[in-house]
Image (cartoon, rainbow, N blue to C red; front, side, top):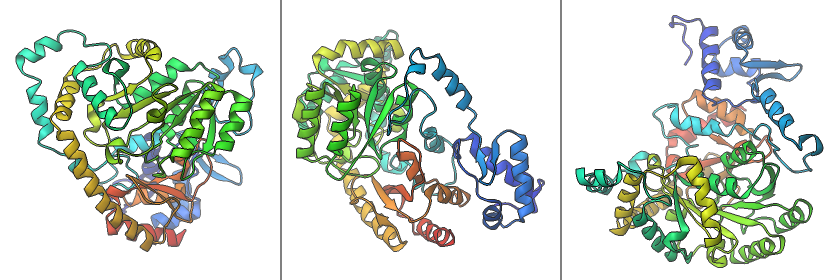
Length: 479
């Protein structure tokens, strides 16, 4: 809170607060700061104090004033992005089609804002916008034991003093093959490649299969990191609305006819942020489109550990003919272990492996061996069962509190995340909640083309705190 007892003036304190949030990307480029009047009311200071603080930010080049519109976080990278676009050989001859986001320029929204929030402690309160389970949920006795078992002196000498297997630890790939078989996704160990987390697997797939300027179909709403990553690679995004049963097929069909996309990236099970699961009928029709129009489907199964095994997966229906399965363990085991994987058709494996080798050579075997041990002994499966039971209970409590606070669920609550309608601009709400020590995930983060949204994503595991919902309801009433 701002205080007159500080050695800094109120103006300096307010300016420093906004400056730090801009540096941490908690206020993304292009974000509109509260109006002078709003900010004065929120912070309990005079309008002249706010004007002086904004003037300091202007002088530091952190914000810009737009006539009759207010103050906005400066988009310092826009000029560099434009320069990069000009250097592309075909840039002068291409114009993005209607509904297409990105063409090698700035990401639709600064996707690292929420990620940086994970590494910049806002407060010691549970954070509604986080994308992972609370650390105390993930604590276990079996993980340290597994690490100790694979790090004896002899073991370290055997596999740490040389590069590991290019595709990843063979023991882990065998364990992953068995895990996928339980999901009806049949992939031999030789058709599995380990990666540095699921995001790395997605990156390997897109770098292997795409070239700058290619069109990629993505789900909207969807995960901003994937939008920004593809845009940074020079891809043209084709955002398709995601509904309860799957993507809007007529939109996908039109994209296929007009743009000949090379790739479709999908989260079929417990979609982020809605929690939707793909229906069998929709899955079959998407696969028919893929066969008809010759594109590959990358299916991100990040939430498989908390999902029912019988959930519909295109990789299972397709037998990895036109699909690539991507998974990881950050959501269920240990975010910092950074172990992910992909499974693909044998005809693609060597190309995908070449891309991995160019980027990371091999992946660290120590934690891969420890994870294999956890899987082989059934400890990961039992841990996941406990997490599912705990998450079900947390979801019930969180939904009840959200409804009491006036939220409306835009999607049936399921999985880790809830997609809720607040009735107010959630980017503006997120700024106000930061002052109270809460990091939100506003709806604008999840759209390929930035636009105001009254929606936000909540983490059911971290929104069981009645104090958060009380503060939320109080601020919404004032907006």
